[in-house]
Length: 148
Image (cartoon, rainbow, N blue to C red; front, side):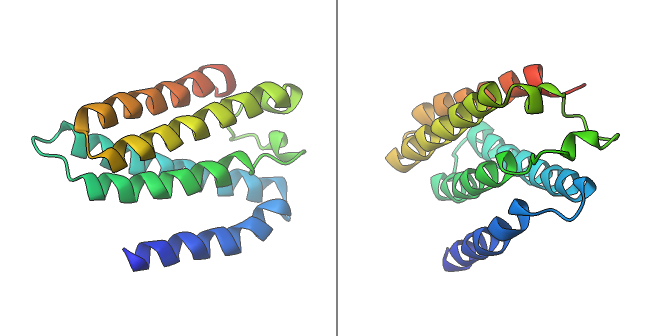
């Protein structure tokens, strides 16, 4: 547990300055693509636990903590000019409707906080419900802001 806490702390410490100033728009794209890959991996780990016969709540809690950090890093990785990367699946609305995009970020972050609280309660049913809300928040953002 301590190692995971150190990894999260190091990620935040070193990533915070890097996402503030990307050398090139492609760097911002690569950064957010990497974060999205990690978000998907941790969502998958949580989902696998919740589908198991006896979910390990500590494993879920560890993944939720990482997901919380990753979400904050992800939404900070859309600086002006990074919409010009041809391979990006991000729609231009991210940059033309930043307030709406921020609402999606805030909604997702709030749902992850709820998921964390549900997980800490030890109640798998409440955790499943909260996880479903996180997944719905992800999907809503993808529907409006990601090209398929």
